[in-house]
Image (cartoon, rainbow, N blue to C red; front, side, top):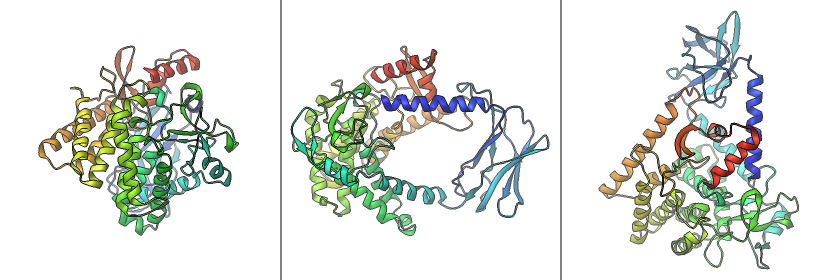
Length: 474
């Protein structure tokens, strides 16, 4: 909850800065760059009408105009209440590689964007290496951390275990999380395990390009680092320890293995349910076992660990769910776990399990196209996992060959994507930010993520935080 309060304070500050900058003209453009055949849109933020105006694409090296087109119609995002007009400058049809700027002229004043590039695979080339570097620097591997984490106390116990490794959560928070909002039930994020699975997925999906860019070894080493940490977090009782918590204390000896409640209250409920990181941890270990690479553990140990944890949760999962009930997050995380075990083993048991979880997830789809989070009418709404039900079903289809099963999953994917596109586009939305459906006062509404959080408050920061805490618990 402390992290969410900080995040909300930051968001309010950004909004206030934006309001104070009312008179400024800004050209928003992806300064990393664009692939030649990708959509390419800049957003012009201006305080009055730009009717019938044009924009130019300028070669940043020669200064020559290489493309001209009309500026789109004025859009005002009602939910943001910033008093601005936003105009799309669409240059998707321009595909020539090079370095460019967006420029337009109004009332004898020329406005120019920052420099950007058009180049094949530029987003992947420029961002993946930075992401790998970031996680490498986030490793919990200082001498002090390693010493403390090799002898970590379980909350409320004298037992110590070795859970060294992994990544610190964020700048200023050196805790390590499988999931940090377990008490909230419906918005539990997937943290360390999802990072590990994503690294593994990237390595397998674009392996040749990673080799070409000379970053595959670094990425693979980071994935193995994550897998090794999860193996250490797998207890002798076959559940995963959920959190190594720092108590926001710089002294590593203050760290404990804990469960978290609101306001950073710690408990001994540190066993991870499927939705509390365990499902994605199982998926990661099963998938990386096929690499036949060893870190501090062997491929066989990775796979055996995944099997042990899965078998344990089939019996104990609802004991670890904070409200004692499985919801949609259990479903898609367990589907990922069963699918990766099926792919790794080709065992009919995991085939049946994957189909079981796929059917559960499919049954949560409503006629309108949104997923139910629970057994009632709460839409699935999430800050970080919004796309994971679709990712889980897509990964499942990599293995599923039965025509009837494939058709059922494909129909759900199509329906969910169409609904989300409609929700995203049914209001003025020049930046194309994803919007979601949510439940408030027993009424289903649509909104931008932070507008979803802020709109019902209506009475200042205190009420906003009260509403957020209520929404997390709902």
